[in-house]
Amino acid sequence: MDWKLVVFVAGGGAVGSVARFLLAASITKGTHHIVGTLAVNVVGCFLIGLLLFGPLSAHVGPSGRAFLAVGILGGFTTMSSFSYETVALFEAQKVNLAITNIAATFVACLAGTWLGRFVGLSIA
Image (cartoon, rainbow, N blue to C red; front, side, top):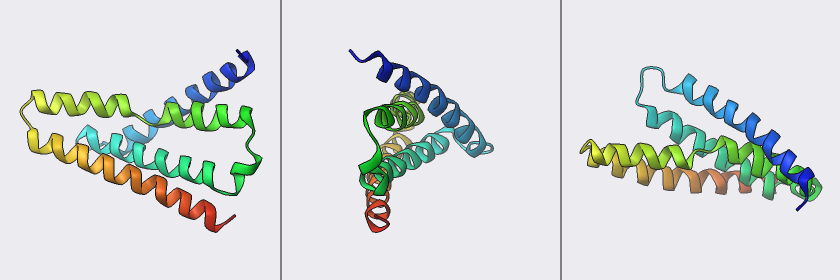
């Protein structure tokens, strides 16, 4: 086990988690909490597509990948929040909103990753 990489993941995770909290909190004022989670997931997917497919990808070594992709973006994206919120919507019998949340997250996050990849490859 390379403990240096573990430290990079932990440090990045702290940064990503705080960034997620701040972005989601700024978006959800006056809206349903799932809007902030969706926005965070789409931004995170875009950034991972940009990072891992863009011009930086050739220069990001194991430490950079551990810190940026696994740490920051892993701490930033919120699939556990998405899962909890969706189950809570089903339990509250808000089935249409739950299904909309699933579809919107799936489509928007894939689109975000694809767009990040497209932008990254076009500036390479």
